[in-house]
Length: 336
Image (spheres, rainbow, N blue to C red):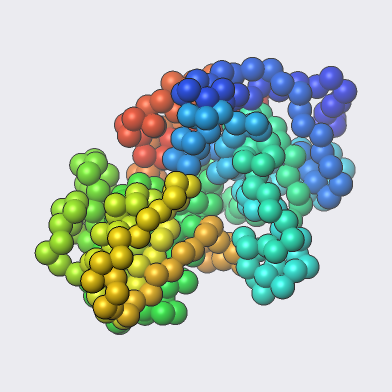
């Protein structure tokens, strides 16, 4: 295959204007910098964190759960399948050397947020942000290795050092979106039992029950839990978690929320020893474990991918996703 002539080369990409408006436009293919390669997007999963860009607009092309093929003839990576690891990282600082690539101390940049992302035909990606995907992983499941599996499994692995499975009965997962459902599977795989889930969406609760969790009514304070995985990002759920977590238990903040959070510092907060833990994304070193998790629960993860559509259908599909009609729809970019 001949190299793309990037002189005046264009591609189709989604433009997030704000006010819930997305258009598909022809834009220039971004420049590929030193140490980067051009990736042809095959699949990008939609993520609820992009609602912020849907409402306020985006400076760069959005989309951060990306899977594609390197299109760089002559390069050692050309033609290979990769998921795109979104945090840029230096590989040199103390955090990177420790393996915590998602917490790089020198570089603060996320693909799809601070530079072009995957709601497009192509994007440039630093070579150290490419995660090889084995051929037995189908294209539509490959993006799940990132947020749905990577973020969820990292949160479970992190808290297991503090509250191991034998000390964590019962467990509550608040929020049964893609990450919350991923947490349920990761908890099961790690040996946690007596898992409960809370969410107002009945369809998501149905899936959570099929994954082995029991329903816990939203807002119910009648039972307390040794481990609470807060995956909704809602401040009310965080405050409720502080109330419901047992002494010496752990509340893990997995869900995202950029708004200021005021903790309700009542008696239950002041008179209890407990762990409150924040986890973010996952280290690159988790990749093999995440692939193994996907293989073990492949049928369950397939349930989450409940829509696949082309780039020109993105505006309508994103609106349905925002309305809670879809769980983990996937953009399938056609080759031109």
